[in-house]
Length: 134
Length: 79
Image (cartoon, rainbow over the protein chains, first blue to last red):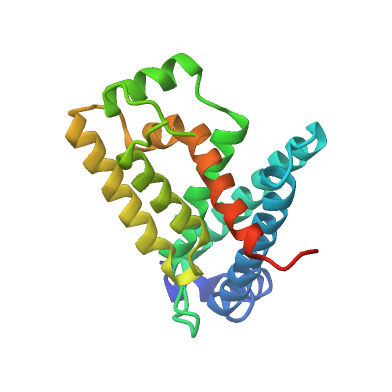
């Protein structure tokens, strides 16, 4: 957490860059980020699950995931510096981290899939040869 | 084909994490992590939880598609 004295020494520069109330600004940005993730999930459902995705869908899905991950990581770093406001929605910085982890796992699954040999070896080791059902 | 109940439980926990309310995400993640660790401990495996999630991704995608199909079927026509 940033020391208040240190912030005062930076004077108006810190206030212009971070805003007068960084925690409030961060809360607002985090709400917007969650909205973007939800919008992404709705569109992903339509384009990637409800139909066979076209190659353009796959490219855009990758780009949007990268952007959401970068924005989420940025927010996560700022929250570590400034803390996160308790809010009526009841969500916390840990909820943001969990959402970010899900996006990263989806990115790897869709766009950097594990080689089939490694995947089969892991599944055999953990589930004793039982094949997945789908 | 008979389903593997342990894999189904992991898929369901992952689906719950993806679809739960914002304020429930961390709790859903903890539950998924716990189930992954239990599966790995049961097998005596040194694989990490993240690697296991990755290995299950293709199958999870089909699980999710099947769940969504059930939801779409319940929607009024035209939605």
